[in-house]
Amino acid sequence: MNRPRLFLVTPPEFDTSDLAAKLEKAFAGGDIACVLIYMPGAATKDIQDAAQILVPVVQEGGAAALVYRDTQAAGRSGADGVHVDTSLEDVKLAVESFQPEKIVGTGGTKLKHDAMEWAETGVDYIFFGKLDLDEREAAHDRTLSGAAWWAELFETPCVALAGNSLETLKDVAATGADFVAVKDAVWKSDGDISNAVAAANRILEEHPFPEVE
Image: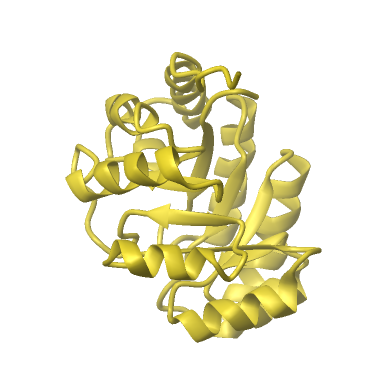
C-alpha cells in the first residue's frame, strides 16, 4: 500500500472487554497497520492480562499488536512486538531479544542526533510525538517537522502522532511519514468507531508516496 497507514494507540486506561469490542469495530472500518497497547502506569501482570485478550483481536484484524515498554508482557502475550523508549540501552536489549522475529519500535527522543543514534540499533520504526502529553486538536509542530526531516533523509520507517481531530491527519500524512498514529481522534469520535477509521483511511489515501524512479 503506497501511502501512509494507520497506527492506533490505545487509551492509557481502559476496560479490556470494552476495548476489545471497540477494536473489532475499528477493524470493520478499514486498514490498520498496528495497534500499540499503551498502558504506561500499569504493572506487568495487568499489561499481560490485557494483552492476552487484545492481541488476538488485533492479529485477527490483520494488524501488528505492539506492547508499550514492557518486554516481558509482550513476550508472554504473543504480541508482535514492543515499543521501547526508556533509554538507548533498553532499545538495544529489546532489539537483541526480539528481532528478527518480532517488531521493535522506539521514539520520543528530544534531539535529532538521538533519533539517528537510536535508529542505528536496527529498530523497525522511529516514533515522532509525545504519547504522554494531553492531545491537542492539531499535531505538534515538532512532530511534523521531525517526521518530515526523517522521511526525507532516512530509510527506517517513521510514525508521526496526529492531534485529536481527524482533520489533522492531512498535515501528518503530508510529512511523508510511513505511519500516522491516532489516539483520541478515533476513541473519542462522536460517531461509530468504524466510521472514524474509514474516514482516516480516506484522508491517508489522498497522500500517496512519490513514485521512486
